[in-house]
Length: 230
Image (cartoon, rainbow, N blue to C red; front, side):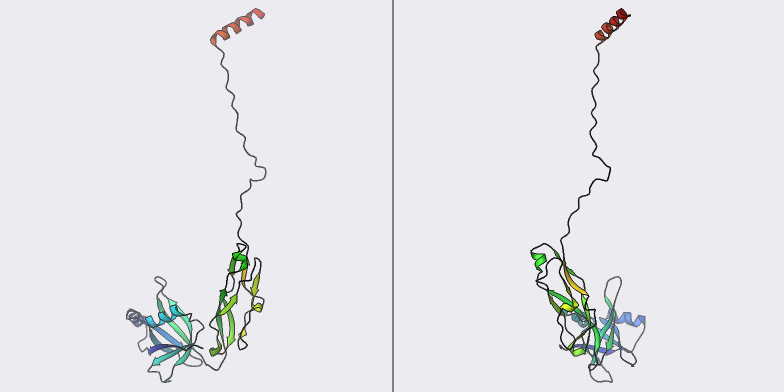
């Protein structure tokens, strides 16, 4: 297991106003929660916390928190419990740590990573559907997998990979249902042409015949002939 360290200081001044001042000075307020222990208020450098977040996925990763002035006098093994963000600018405003025991199994979510390009995508024009992004497992903190890599290169349209199709380390217990679908390849979308509504017929153009005008002379002759017949 890769060891990750993060330095912190004890936080004496509590309250919203104090926390706001900390953030202005480049620090993030936080709390360390432990099993049957009083929560410990701390503060960490924003740039160091952001560095960990951008360099690696830190949810489910054990962080050795080195707290200056801590009576324990050694790093605390922690998982990040929650990261709170500002709803306007999305900046981190608070972080919660959960102290764990390295000798007790814990439950964590491990990310799924697809490897390769499916045959159904490359040859048949389908699309890879990533159904399950995390798989919940239980193991010792030192045995937490960084990620679960799944080879999808042989998948054709209609094929799926379930939890039961994936190999896991023997020291990792899988908690997610074995029948859960993790990845699948779907058929390409077809464009549908709207059909005319039932009973609707194509309108025929109306033919307008031009009315033939009778010359004035013809009208007079026609009138004379009518009188003679009478």
